[in-house]
Length: 293
Image (cartoon, rainbow, N blue to C red; front, side):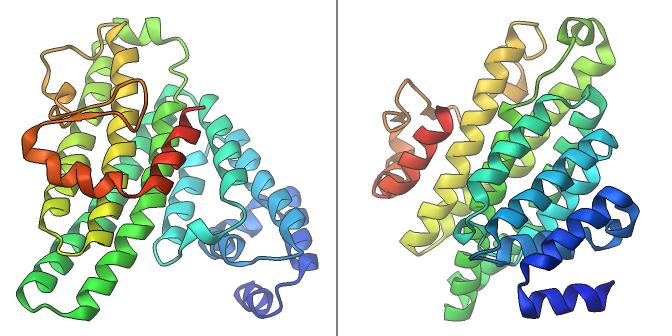
């Protein structure tokens, strides 16, 4: 199978995508060891094979939803994004749509597992590297470190947007019953707090340290889409007394407030620099507004 997949990378044949789709439907275990490579191919390939790519992507998502093993697919997708500029892929809007719909039907147990996968991925493969690259860029002033940091932050932008889509599309089916169980309430509160303390806060600190404007813009983009998703989720959970107003988990960058229009948020004086940097990038603001609709 690996040789078969390597041949695909070299040929970019539509027939290979169709063949993989057929194999998946016959027996998903044939492709499971190679999920990461398959998703990498899906993101990389462009051109006339788009219809076949969409079909395979849709089949992969629906198959792992039906198998109740969506965690495996999410893990493979996140691995495939580490070294790629997914934003250039023509499949991004299609993936967003299919991924969001899949999340809406997942049971509570899978939701908590996938939430932890996202946090773990960002902490291990982004935050740790960002910290070391930021220090290297400041101390040694190496251009290589700066370019690596910029590429890492660009990759994190899309990972953050997928994480945001996950948070905003959690259905919490039967949440009234979950609210009665202390274990369920505790796990949600723990995940909210972990996302803030392990992901959002460190990213905020990094954004204040980076020297280049493009890197600041990229970090700010990830901060705001995650902050928005967490804020929306908290508003919903408060209705069921799962997120309390005075809890630590609700303290999501309180110096920045999200209001009706995404481009009209009110920063504290301490964050004027951060907001002024981000506001120059109208493209990302437009992206955020589109995500709202």
